[in-house]
Image (tube, rainbow, N blue to C red; front, side, top):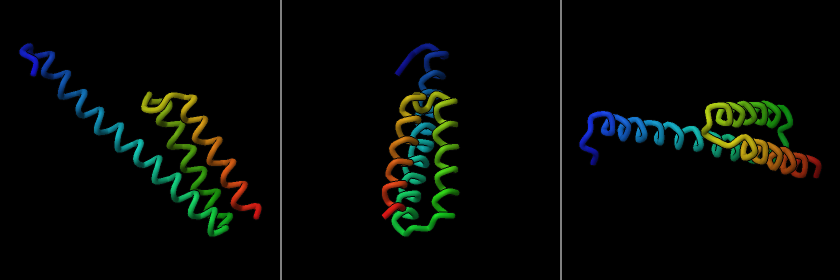
Length: 89
């Protein structure tokens, strides 16, 4: 553990931020799973709502620096592609 007061504070802040980032990433993963489940059930209305919510979460995470912007774009792209594949059958 650090000896300097400011270093101790940075350790605490880093821990707090890490917990917040992990929680946010978990919410994105949960949103993705919900979209896939709705797509498999072929519920068009729910899919569009959940997909919109997932887009918002990814964009917010990219804006806050939790996800890289390309990672957010990749997640959105792959999910949209999968939803189209599942709902077209």
